[in-house]
Amino acid sequence: MKQAIAALGILALLAGCSSEETNQVQADLPVDKGTVSPGAGNSVAIKGDALPLAGKGIVEVGKPLPAAMVSSAELKPINIADSGGKVRIISVVPSIDTPTCDEQTHQLSEDNGGLDESVELITVSMDLPFAQSRFAKEANISNVTFYSDYKSREFGDKNGLMIAPLGLLARAVIVTDQENVVRYLQVVPEVTALPDMQAAMDAARALL
Image (cartoon, rainbow, N blue to C red; front, side, top):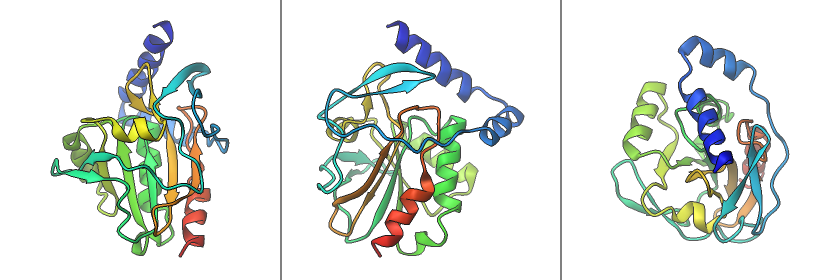
C-alpha cells in the first residue's frame, strides 16, 4: 500500500507540471536501455520502488502477441493480435498525460524516419479513448493509432504488463512482424525513464 501511494504521488506530480516545467522535465528524461525479463513474477520500479507486474507473464520474443481486446477512439473493440499483415511498433505507456509518456509518443510519431509510411504505429494505455483523442488532437499527431485497455484490461493481463498496485500499464515497446510474432520487446525497468525507441525502430525497419 505504501509503495502504491508513493507511486501514485509521483505520477500525479508529473501530470501536474506546468508547460515550462514539462519542457524542462522532457529535456532531462533518461533513456533506459535495459528490459525486464520475460515470464511471470517480475516487477518494474518507480523511483526505485518495486511494483509487481500482474497477469500471465511478460510476452516473449519469438512468440505471437496474445489476442486481447482493446478499445479504439470510436469505442469499438479491436483485437490487438490482428496485425493486418503489417509490421507494427506498439508503444505502451502508463498515462499519456505525463511528460515521459508524452515524449515517448512524440518520438514514435515524429522521429520514426519515415517508418510510418509502411509500419503501423500504435500507442496503448489505460487512458480513456476520449483522453487519447484529445491528446492526439492537441499534439497534432495523426500517424499513430491509439488504443485503450481501460475496459477489459486484457492487453495488460495477457502480456504481463499490468502494474498491479496502480492499475496502469508498464512502459514498454513491442515490435511485431507481418504475422503478429513479437520480434523485439523492451519492458522498461524504471517507469519514469524513456525506452530505447531508436532500437525498436531499427528492429521494425529490419523486418521490412
